[in-house]
Each structure stands twice: as structure tokens, then as C-alpha cells.
Length: 74
Image (cartoon, rainbow, N blue to C red; front, side):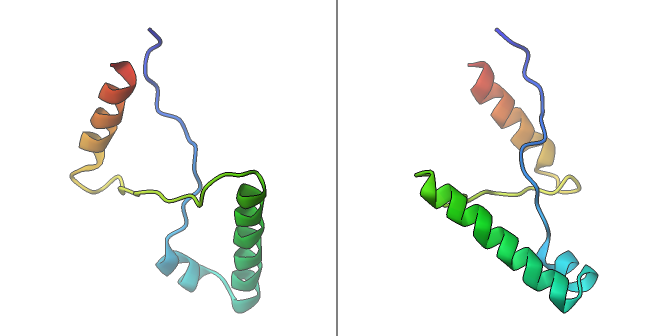
């Protein structure tokens, strides 16, 4: 059995950070890029990507990683 390793699989942008960090043109570009990726998923027969995000400073963070590790290793 392979050892479980954490990997970077997603890019997550927090809405409040986007609102504060990007100017209106950059926000518009980001929306267009999000739409393009969503269109690619749809054309590829993939479902809409829905995720649960647990920030690293939340008490549940390590618990969630352990849950995933246990599921993968079973």
C-alpha cells in the first residue's frame, strides 16, 4: 500500500481577499476565467465542482486530513 501524502490539488480564493486585492478589471477577468474552467468541465462531462474548504487555522483541519487519510488507506 502506498503511503498517504497530502498534495496540492485545488486553487482556492477567498471572496473577501479577492474583493480587497483585485481591482474591478481584475475581478472581471477572474470571473471570465472561472467561467472558462466551468465550461471546460461541462464540455468534458464533469459535474460542477463543489468542495468543502477547511482553513488550516480551524480546529477541524487536522481532523479532516486524518479522515481522508483513513479513507484512502482502508
